[in-house]
Length: 384
Image (cartoon, rainbow, N blue to C red; front, side, top):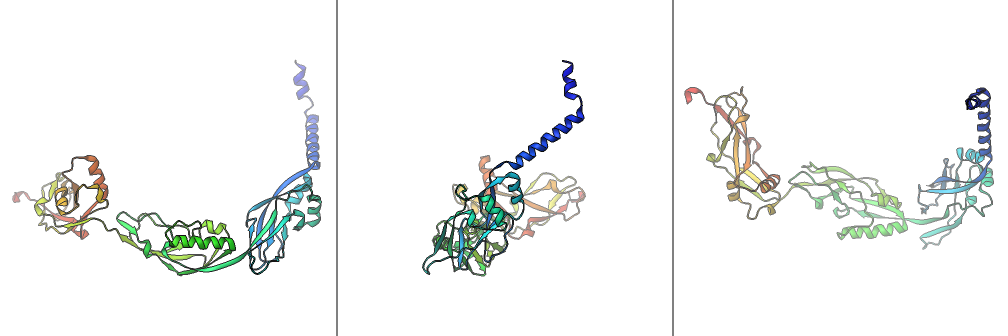
């Protein structure tokens, strides 16, 4: 028992050398092991032949055509064979290829396909290294399959409100007038693969008919939640669905203007009776009373008329809307003529849930905002 620790810990220098040699041998063996190894490449279309970037497959697309398969910027996997160290060195630098197909299609043909594309058919930057690492191609599934091109087509689109979905809502009591949406410019040009453009044309017709399009032209237009004024200069860009299909728009961005209007709410305008003003609470100091208060027109709006079983009219407002002055808000050092704001409350409704719902839907205020403030007079002792 006592000799085991001695064997384990004795002569540490030799043991470290042996461990280092073992690691080096393992690394050497790993580097010489041969086998298949996949490598990922990004497919990039181009209009002219150029040196591709590392880890890319550059497809030179003839004029008037669009690459649709594999999709631009998608990834493909190619299998290589060889010692791991050799493969790692190949992948580390100038591991890229290109292809420049010559499309032979009649004037009426809209699709052209290059089938059975092999990795050996590509023009590799390091062609000799690639040839030795790709093997004979019999057992190598390149993962490319085929290249498919479609003719580039396009057409103008006259912009109209039905082509834009509006998301969100403005401030309470306001609405977005989508029918009044305007654009600058009011016409764009769209282009893309023939098949995608046919689908876009059908989607535009669906949107104009009030249906949900399969391919929205634009991203939804977002309305800020507190908007009360017209929204100008809102940018409209192509929808992600359209971009993914290879569709492009000229110009790339359209500026729009969306009118914001007051809702046509149930509305009552009335002039309160001076004797209906309620003085609530007590001043913090002294005795106060309203100066000569002349009632002015007030307005009540209800955002949900279904909350009331009957009519929302002046009679209902006079019965259930109470105007009051909170005397406790007069500070101790207030000067004569202090202006106290009028408040309002609901009265004569017993159900607390109904009160809560109505308070959330009812807006009450003077027609002129300055009429909300009432001048107050301090009552001197000799005034009684």
